[in-house]
Image (cartoon, rainbow, N blue to C red; front, side, top):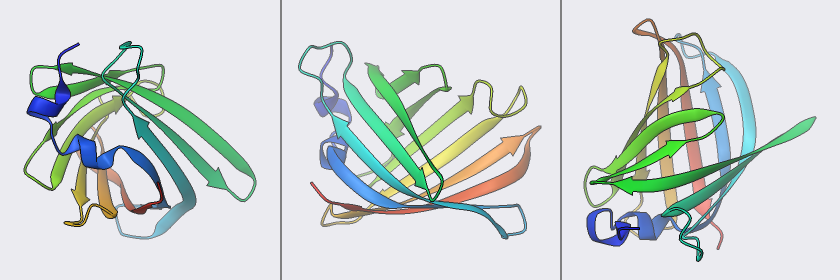
Length: 149
């Protein structure tokens, strides 16, 4: 595998464990969901992919866990699993941009854009998602996380 550290150096600051909260909003800004999150990102030693992230989402009545294996292609990290297909790239020294499509959660033709902004000290990040269907905004997600390990 190619080294992502050469073309995507900000990713090294995201490796580790993060806790936070997701808040989902309808197009008018009304809250429709809120849940806790735990993210763990690492570089697998076996070389099966370039980066792995496991997201655990927790509500009062349930928990979900999803794994995302990322592969470097050019300057982008690509993901393709049972849930999503998409890619991310480094925008500047503190920012990552992602775009992806849910394979079954939304209608065909859906897409999302995500902006991840890392604090200068690397200990906090904020993320925003824009959910689109038929080129119309259907939801926003606002995420705040802090590094715990």
